View 1: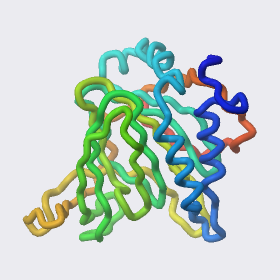
View 2: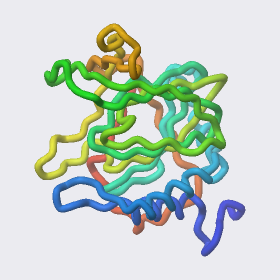
View 3: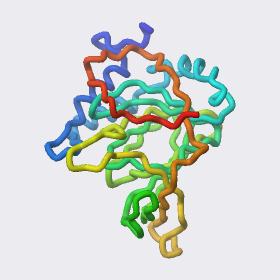
View 4: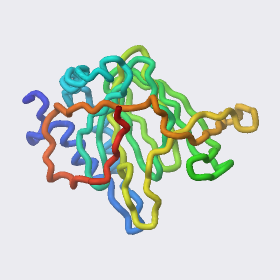
Amino acid sequence: MASLRHAGGQSRIEQLWRQVLDTFRWTAGGAVHYEDESFAVMKRQVDALTAEDISLEESLSEMRQHQGFRNEEAVGNIHICDSDIATMQVFVLHKDQQMPIHDHPQMIGILKVIKGCVRINSYSFKGYERKIAGASILQTSKQTMDVCKGDPACVLTPSERNFHSIIALNGEAAFLDILSPPYFTRRPGHELNVCNYYQEGGLVGGTDEENLVRLEEIRPPEDYWTVKGEYKGPRIQQHFGISNPLRPSFSQK
């Protein structure tokens, strides 16, 4: 573990988490705010992070003992740490396995591939065709890109690329996921930011102009579930963050 320590005796992952907590701030209105300069520092740290910095293979070795993960049925999930304003974790996908289209209501996200390659289909909200709880139809602008280990991190915001699906290419893939605020955060004057799922419903107007695509809200897919893995990387001092009892819970079988 000594090889994972850096300046000041802190590991890269601990330095990153500290920067995450220094970057995101609550506003009086219950929104998340950040300064561009601080965000850029955090983004550079995420870009530099590797699987070795979090001892990913140690976590995977243990997770492969779970039948659901070993049989390539479940997505792997390694929770690293969280606070009242942010959460940091890793997801692991098997070859051709897909994380279904889902949203991040009023959230900022950073996704860094640290193993393999993934295809990300991102959707930016343009408007509603129908707004009904649990059955909304949205108009979105779609963008597709392949991202591999070593590539810069991807960023989503409340207005840009807030919906996405992720599929592993050419083998097992893993990515670091930072979200602010976490799912299921209760903010005064705002709805609870639950995770909603969608499916593509065809091109808007029957054309591919601006690649406008309908998203139809669906029930959580029954075939999408996760296996929890234990974080085996460098210790992150707990006083850097406040434990959030409302952090996301993931579907289990």
